[in-house]
Image (cartoon, rainbow, N blue to C red; front, side, top):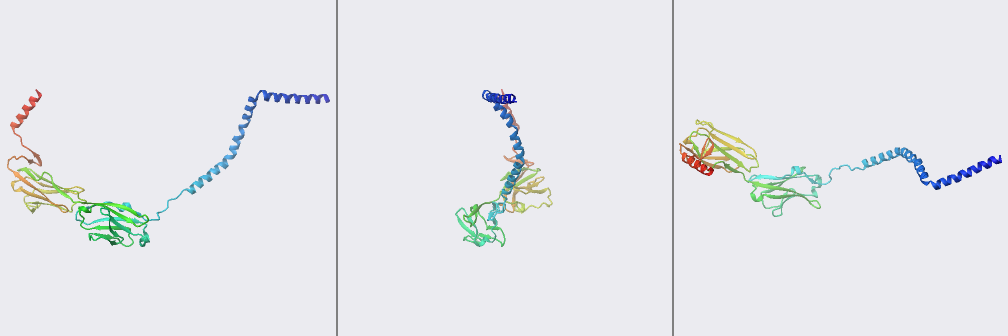
Length: 315
């Protein structure tokens, strides 16, 4: 028994020394073995940690959603730009510059809406009161309304420019509106004189330009008398196309010498314009219109000269 125990103890000692020698001689193998054993542990750890991680992510996501700011309504006054636009006004016709202020509420006791002309930095109105000696300007504001309107009577070209709608906050708030005062013009195409061959159609075209709104009506005169479209003469008609540019066409068929004279186009919102029409019996002046088209008559001599010049240029 003692011999067997001695042999066992000696084997353990020999095994111990062999293990130590192996570790000393082959450290690379031991390190690789340790790495292989360590691969499973982190995977298990992450597997067990993932539920808590997902919960943590969910909590964080919920916190982010909760922290997202929600839009809040404006608390102070501001301008409604849709209802406060630039204005194009007709010369001499009353103009209205509108300024709509939101959220002013009951603060009108402390805050005022004013109009200032930028051309000379002139204070025109404050609230519902007018502060100018020019009686053409007037402040318009109805109770419980958000609109603060500047009225300008009989506007002139010099009134064109920038007007400032101002709220008396600290610092003050401003919105700028541009007023453009225009004067419509009338033109008759082909004027001031027109030559028409007898039997052709007189086609007079009157154009109204730079008008902020179409004219309510346009009527024609012939030698200071309003043209009647139901006269026994017949063949007289008018076609008017309204829009940004309004056009009126006067058509007189089978022109005759009695149709000669001064024709006048009279728009309701613009100055009139005249043209002198000559209906000819075979004469050929320098400018002439046949069937509504202008032309200059040529002769056989002119054609021969042109042909000779063309032949010489090609030879």
